[in-house]
Image 1 (cartoon, rainbow, N blue to C red):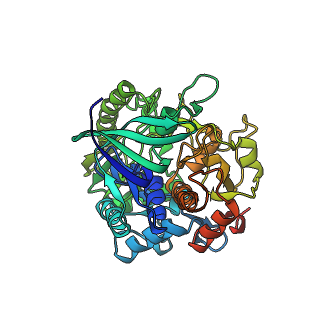
Image 2 (cartoon, rainbow, N blue to C red; image 1 turned 90 degrees about the vertical axis):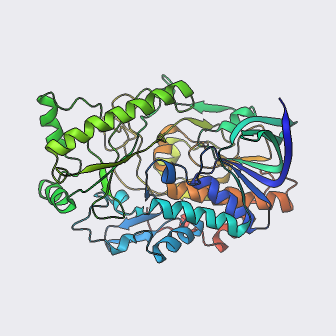
Amino acid sequence: MNIVREDSYDFVVCGGGMSGFAAAVSAAKKGLSVAIIECTGTLGGTAASAGIDHLLGGRKLNEETKEHVRVVGGLFDELTDHLIGRGEAIEPNSIDLTFNPFGWYPRMASGIVVDETALKIALDEFCEKYGVRVYFFTVLAEAELSGNAVTSVIVCSKDGFVRIRARVFADCTGDADLCKMAGCPVFKGRDSDGLMTPCSLEMHVENVDAKELVSYQNAHQSPKLVEIIDRLREEGIWTLSSRIFVTVRMMKEDVFMVNTSRLVMVDGTDEESVSRAIAEGRKQNLELFRIMKAHFPGFQNARIRRIYDYLGVRETRRIDGRYFITIGDALSGKQYDDCVAATTYNFDLPDPVISGYDPMMGDTRNPNAVRRHIVIQVPYRALLPKGIDNLIAAGRCVGADRDVMGALRVIGPCMMMGQAAGTAAALAVRNAQDSFPAVSTEELRKTLWEDGVLDPAKLPFD
């Protein structure tokens, strides 16, 4: 391998999605020199590249007051308040819930719809402001180790192979790529067969009659148009694997995101599998669009605005953390002395084969099925992979049962975990000899709350 140059930083974040962005900026704010390694041409992950212009999990609807309350704080609120203040995102509390094209369930209604381009630019601006070096179109190729530490990563870009050294590292790839390269134990898929929840390929359509669509949904109490789909299935018109229609409005009144494609039997860590899924997703969306125009209220005059080129992957690898959050922990509302993040989002991890079915959402056959809304705490130890002391993980690859990740994997809690990881990096470099396990969790938690992150133990939900 020909190394064309060597770069060096205090902290290197692999993966520039929302958790990686939060980790990098949080550490840079504390004075570290920081770099992000990102394989696409934008920060923000699925929020910016895959058409998920709906930042979920940062607010929650209070059913009594009908107010969308903040449940993450910190950098999530700083970013979204910045976008809302510039008219580039929609404040959930400004939406009329009796006629709501932005989401029908509490978890969807509390999402913050953003302008995709404005989000990308804002993420760039934050990184520029705090001096974060971003390596776009750069792929993680190898981890170099010494004992129980990562000393450097080898990345590949148009320049060739570059060695990047750092004192501490974060895996925010979503797929635990760096952890796996470093030899840390990981899990992938469900225990019985290794299968993972379906992927999606988003489509945005324009010239939609939102009034006609939402009026029908309200009148029939049918946000997912299930009765229409059931009829179309009986007539042989609907042949898609998904049996529900999922769509929400974007910033413009006539533009809707369609999150209906369900690509089963896909491994998001396997190139051939992902390549097949992208092509199949385009095919599914085109078939779906023809059905929408012919049979769904409000879509008669719709046009395809964009079918995205970045696959929405819900599940791949998870680390075997120094603490592993079990489904029992989550359902019991277990609290931790080292809690640094949490989620109030619903369980949302569709069955790997039956794509319209979520076994955790009210299934009487499943003793673990959720019948009430809970706060799931994330202990700091769940972010720490076994075996490597100067490596931390954040996002949907942390140490937890796969069912727990159905509530943890959305943007709000991912940014919360990212901010915890970045703040811990600053403390590790300053106080703890570049060791994440040696970081004082009391000091970490105090710093996070002082920086505006909301203490999960004080959230107003049971």
